[in-house]
Length: 117
Image (cartoon, rainbow, N blue to C red; front, side, top):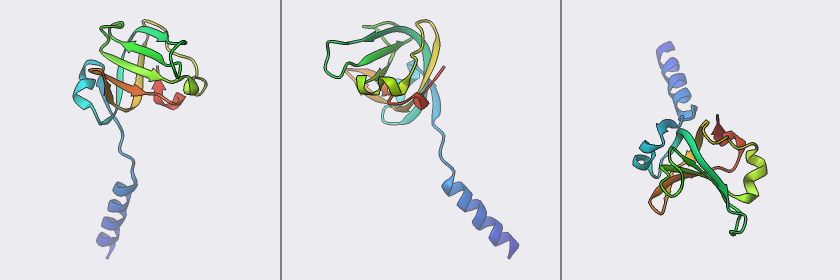
């Protein structure tokens, strides 16, 4: 009886334990499109397109635009929720769903919990 109770509790714990996002480098992100992951790299450039609809901020990792390896996208409406952006040259990680835009993998960051420095 104790063994079956233990087994039930173990299975329950496995079922409710959240699956952690795997961590990948910026160059590896292209192999994980459609997956939730944490992507880390060095900030090569950052730009806010103030004259574009939605005022997006692009943080490009490992190489500056137009040769960026990975992009962190922050829409203007989410900018305050994200908080302080990482400095150029610093290391940063973004967690979320990896998608592809014009051949470059990216994660859309909507809050500070998705970025770590």
